[in-house]
Image (tube, rainbow, N blue to C red; front, side, top):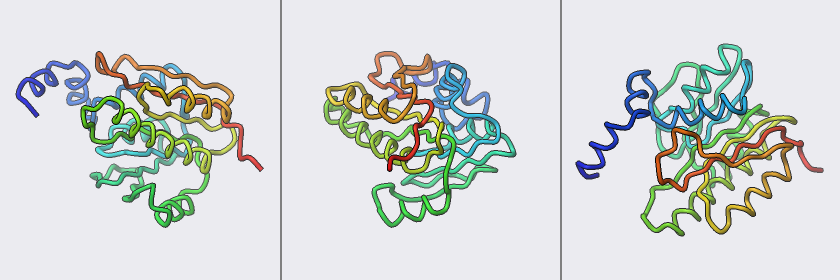
Length: 202
C-alpha cells in the first residue's frame, strides 16, 4: 500500500478513535452505529460473528451481550484471542466445518457478518464476490437463528443486490439497507440489517 493511503488512513477520525479506544478495527464503529439505530443485539444474547478477524466486531458484540451472553467468531484466517469470545477457524464453504460449527454453537439470537474478499479493483467482480459472502451469511442466519433473531451483513450495491435484499426481506419482519456514518466516503459498501427472523420453514 502506498504512502498516500497510509497518510490518509492516519487522518481518518474513526481509525484514530479505534486506536484510542483499543478496537482492533475502525469497522467496530459501524457495528456500534448500527446497534444504536436498530438495536440488533441485547444483553444476554448469543451472537455469531462471521468474518470476525481481526476482531473489532467481536469486541463490540462482547461488550453488548455482557457476561451472560455468548459470542462465537468465525474466520478463514486466524484471530488473536478475545476474552469471552469462542473462535472457530475455518471456511464456511467447507461442508464438514460448517456442520461441526452449527453443532457446536446451537441456536443464536443474532448473526452478524463483516465478511469481505480481497478487493481486486474490478468493481463488478468485487461486488459479485462480496455478495456471494453475504449470501453465505444469510444461509447461516436461516440455519442458526432463533425465531425473532436479527441479521446484519455487508454487501456492495450492484445489479444483484436488490434480489438479495428481497430474499432477506422474505425471511424477516423488517429489513433495511444502510451505510453507517463510519463508512468511507465514496464507498459502495452497504449493510443489510434484518430484524425479526420469521423462523425455520417447514
